[in-house]
Image 1 (cartoon, rainbow, N blue to C red):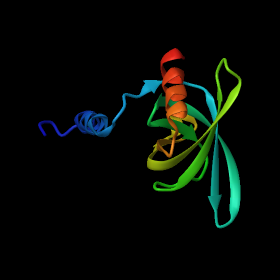
Image 2 (cartoon, rainbow, N blue to C red):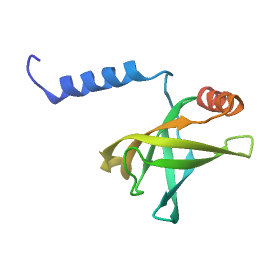
Image 3 (cartoon, one colour):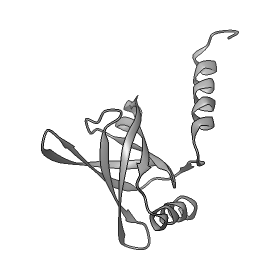
Length: 126
């Protein structure tokens, strides 16, 4: 890499990540609740979305989560006042001190077709 700058490396990593995604992520910002269970104890953590698609989302939270951990997510669907409950696995984590926590990439699993359609509407209607 010519110049060997962090910008070049960050651009490469973002392009690589975009190529691996099955769906395009759309920037969104609304609250969600993350529910994790560790050693028999269930914890609830507030988070904010960073981006969303029908296959996953990015969130920012100060919760102590780890990559490969399975969690549940509760979203109050904006403008519909409905609760959407999803299961996800944490795919990656990076520090985001400027946003007040860590940034996590989540991949949904076992989502129904109706849930995927709702997520797509949320992503493109917000």
